[in-house]
Length: 267
Ligand code: ADP
Ligand code: MG
Image 1 (cartoon, rainbow, N blue to C red):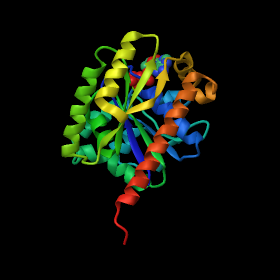
Image 2 (cartoon, protein in one colour):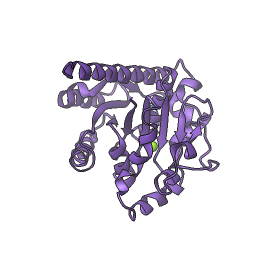
Image 3 (tube, rainbow, N blue to C red):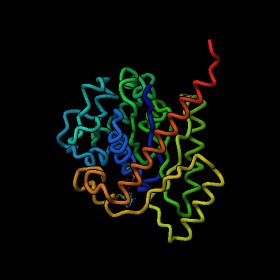
Image 4 (spheres, rainbow, N blue to C red):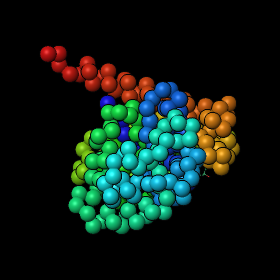
């Protein structure tokens, strides 16, 4: 059964899109079937996957508003390794149109239900706000991956996000949980970053991924080449870090499946 992970943080520029794209590529490199959904009208995950957001035949607008199927709206990312549902400025209209429809927060969940078992992982790149698109992502998702930069105000933002997640859990998705907190753009020489990182570990324990994403110029350059970092420069520290993250996520979800199996009484 596939796992749906929303990559979310209401703050912009923390590495959501970089994480969504490079995690999708790294999971696909381990032979998992992956669908990446760009839910941000900026379309950065679309462009970083090598797909021109102005040339696509459909986006998540058609999926959410016109109720088209995943097969109808998706594109195969140019390297063919993962499937992509793209976004561009059309998606801004989706946010407004969704306000008028019945069960508006359920649209993505309903759209993904028929393909959930086909994919091993569905990764959703969320916009940098807690709007109806993000609520759709969190309603559809099994878990939320939170990328964050270890800086002074980061913990405050994280508390606000955790609060939203627990409210949504009570209302629209009672199985939603934190997949993990990912430290991004990390510079170990920065004392503040180390302090914040220690506080994070104290507060959130093993919810903080052991994998740390370093600040790495290759990760910033790769989108302009329209390729995840592992295709652009697979020996870069950034590409290796995202491969390690994929490994950590796969191990965690396999362990969780085992725990679930042993917890069930034998019949
Ligand atoms: P978000 O989606 O949260 O707004 P992005 O993934 O777009 O964040 O990242 C913001 C900027 O930082 C982008 O220019 C991106 O290329 C750059 N960036 C992200 N992660 C790293 C990293 N680990 N090292 C260097 N630059 C990074
Ligand atoms: Mg983004």
